[in-house]
Length: 620
Image 1 (cartoon, rainbow, N blue to C red):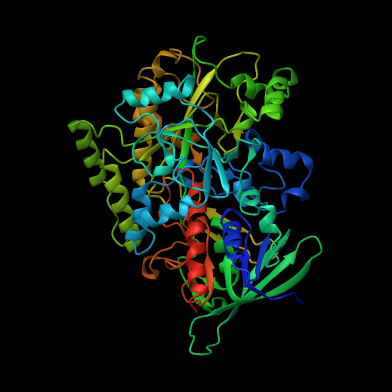
Image 2: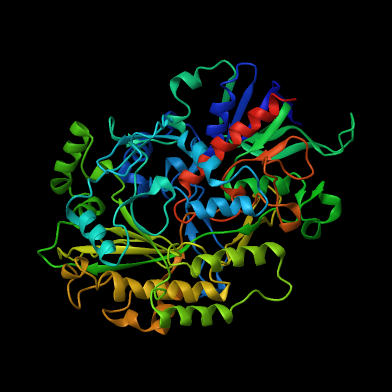
């Protein structure tokens, strides 16, 4: 029997990246009693080694497969050789913002405008960018184009770790300029094609990670009498009342049932006004389905209170792969020695950087190490022959008969980008070190054979995949198991586009000055990568992708903000269709995946949602 605890005006299920933003903003209103329920623990409740790993910018890999990681994996991926791909998801107050790679990259303007064009008025770039600006303050920059004086005074601290005037950041920027694009743009402006400077979510004053829990739940916010945070509990379902009263025909969310796993105690809490699910791209559709909101054809009409077939569908993620290149001895210094020492716990090498980090909050421990990238159009569009090839390719991979209206709209959007020389279909991340992944998605360490080789790595991320998948509950019992199927490369165009971009890494980027002068001819590559010169063969590239590509940790779309007839789950107010007071606010509502890392997008969505929810609550 469930025990009832105090009533609240608003219950937020999930204290992650989005949930804490909403909780912080709603609790600014002293008349609202706000409750957060989070499965993970708060930072002070963790062992000291995990606390330090969360706070130290360069230590996030130590958090994977730890108690602060849900440690999920996909079902076997047909188009990736049947491989199951593992990936982390944050299980901590602050969610994935507490364990991620720190990159703060705004979505492209064209993508956000695409959300609105799909039937979401009020979500156009001018409005959304204002919400995004509420999230952050640029705490450190030497980048002339960075938005350091745009008036942004958000809780989150972001910092540009490099000055982009020397070393590898300048080599990368100059290479992009040699290809005819801007070399170093500010990602926070929503710019299109060209090189990007990527800020980290790091507070340079302290050298620690800035994330939802220490940014949006400051001591002042935590001290609010109208905000309650309960951690270490797992929500079983939303309590729904399907009876009509007062002329309201929609189902009403009356509260939440949750369990404390340590004691097995089940409790209920009542919501007087709203229930907001912010459990992420997997947790949110899971909770909806366990509550009886989902596809009646899948779960049976008797088990479904609100029939919404789109719940758990439209799951999107970026397929990605890496290629590392050995560089000459005369090249600018890389971070390979630091990485090898970190893996081997070589304190002789690590002592200096540790001292620098402790005393000055600088050095390799103080940043993610990923500060440069580029968003580039499909290679070949700049020549008549190349454009003709692309048009021919697109004509052979059109929308299949019987595809949903959203699939047709999605394909139209992606095709417009593929044919535009000023928009980007590929996202290239540059790193001055060896980096590779095993076929199961785990990181592959650099060679530890005593060699002192140095590398650069280019990570390719397919920015606008057409493949979409799903995530659904397959066991509603105690384990509540999920079947997560991103459907990587299930659309034939994705492999074709990805292969041409990956080929361009060798044939274009590292063949262009000044990057080309530092890459060692016929040098070593990362494990599993084709030998030097092999990437010119498109069939070889496709084989490499199928054998080694994995998914980025960028899942979105599983509770999409779309019209219901297009497969949507929530409306532009983020209210679940068929309900009066149940909303979803997190990455799952994003209908078109952002071009790169989704962290900034999720913060922006949460700020935008907070404004909408406040307006709704205080207009009644």
